[in-house]
Length: 493
Image (cartoon, rainbow, N blue to C red; front, top):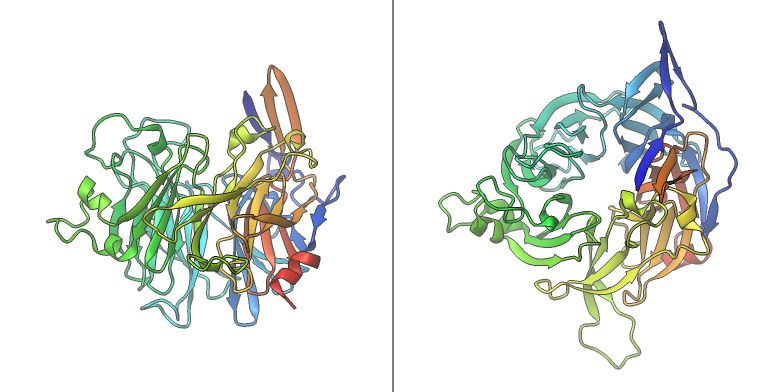
């Protein structure tokens, strides 16, 4: 089985001229599909493959930061072909998103998959008049910007550069960055990068950025067997590395192996940040020190992974009145990502899982959710079919009530989790393709199948209840809202 993605946004050079097709293409052919959701606004994002949308409030203004996958496209504002970085949009009026600018990655890096934003007033030692942004700079480093004026971001510093792992060379290379979290109230940034000499490329790296002008490294952390001095072959589940840290107060939830050979790990935040007091070097990556902050570990089967593990606390379980014990549950929303082999359903179907962590030392799955391939004909649409991630932001109406999922060619899916033992889909929105949408090809039994398909990559929400979705197949940004029965669940105005 071979797969390729053919990007219709092709650039070529005539002496002195850059020619780029479809940089601002309009919709063609298909119409969007929806249930209890409607499109509010959209933007082509200059035909760039997009990873993550991060909305941030500036007084009465809403700004959206979008991280992009590696690639390049024409910046119509400058007339230059730029390697992908991050796009900045004013979404105060969600019906007409306005592109404020595109900031390329810093050469020789390509892509800015993930960004995080903190107001200086919330950081322990930040400038209260400033707003700061952290971003991945390709696979090479993490960079800090001053985005107080989102129209004119100012580069401040490189916080950390990735090292070289000792893993064998592969298509993923020997150094990486990926999804991370910057906790504004403590200033701690939980990076996902490559410390020098470790045996995999994605590890947890903690930095104190409480004072953005004086950052310092706290520690590096991974599963036992990853540390530089460990010996022997790596088990399959340990090869793919960390995918996303999700930190909420006194707990850190780590997802390893985003779509297969996955591991869920729960850590005590204080023990992680202070290290093992019985060790002469509390942060030295010894097996004892790496186990010290661990509360629980759950290993997944070979065909499922942990892309994201998001906690939801104090969920009251519906009951007929005859059961009083343990009606209040703590849950984890865990998503196993549909990887490249999920094209045209050539792999085990991935799923969203709800895991009971009420007794957090013994996490246990209680239900799952999948979108069926029919009647949507998703196996034949092309591209990946299956879940990618869940919205990262918390919202008092959505929390404990609805989960928003990105589902690649099945678009945005909204799931009612008020009874976590029986999650039920209550809404969806599948955007229409455009001439920007990349063609995806796969060869099965010596027959090539090519399609242009939506690939909704990540979703997020803002305080107004708008849902932001970006597309990895270059289709752009879609802003949607709930309608009908789904909206009535949240009692949104």
